[in-house]
Length: 417
Ligand code: UD1
Image (cartoon, rainbow, N blue to C red; front, top):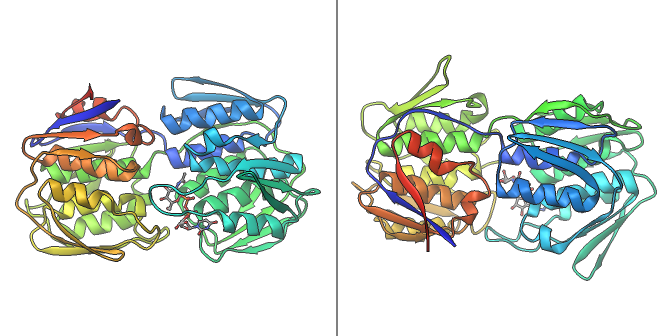
């Protein structure tokens, strides 16, 4: 197994380009089940989760090719079963449920089970499909859904679930009649999926607001579409610039979609400005201040940036708090950051961070994708050597990370353990 080695303390400087969004690409790839005709996707990041999704599409009967950052997809002979071996490695596989039910009237998808950041059930997805006319049985660890054609209806989510909204959007696009989704997720990745479906001939409006209307159409056609840039990758580079006291120019940065993060970063004393080349980020007067953060559904502060901001706050003058409201058990990076010298105390879902003067390199263990990112930014700023084990988590979400960070001055490389 590989580990990542970082010799920290080098300010990062120069341009760094953001890749396509993983969380937009995953549902859009699974939505490729729906159209008749060829889909050409651009800006698809080369990540482990993307390869897993392409494998799933292959098993489901889509012919795909992945060349550079372009994916071509065409449906051949659609199957209905998403096997456990794939679903267990990537929870987003459950997003094939909606397209399969809508097209085939039947879907068998392995139940994703628990994962490192909490129970993460899919009950809201299933309730919505039941309202559209599906029934479900749990058979040997598989959700087996059946319907006699899905029918549009009014759906009100108890919580604005990202995956649930995406699953229903895909199914409702070709369901009979109109669907209204209330308390829909407003995340930019949901908007990207809706825009993609519209490019395929769907009739979706209201994406980006909490009420989305979908007028069902009889079929979708192929299209060419470019995946949006990854806002969490961009936000991670903002933190890396501030942590190392350097100046990065983040190219292809979805700045508007990062409002909540940018607001907190500015309050912490980080200077950010957008120009023709990208978004420039550096400390304003050298000092980082503590702030209070609560994670929320979009447009609130994203849970996927929580670990990185906590790392930055560990170098603040003064104290700050982070309350995690989206996932239980998403503080596994805390014990590792403490091993690097951070002063963080946990009480339930709130972390209290008291700034320290510096972090020190140490051997640490990555536990999930965003926790891994926080350890990388910690390692970049720490004095001495940091060895990050279990970096396969990082390979799920950051494309060519060492290469991109090395190009802006970081001393970072992979070694066999
Ligand atoms: C997506 C993102 C993930 C991000 C999260 C929140 C992808 C592939 N992943 O995950 O990176 O952290 O949004 O922004 O896009 N819940 C239920 N029942 C359900 C569905 C969700 O209880 O049926 C709960 C979950 O357990 C969790 C919370 O709702 O506590 C958020 O889940 P959701 O918004 O669905 O996130 P994901 O789509 O899983």
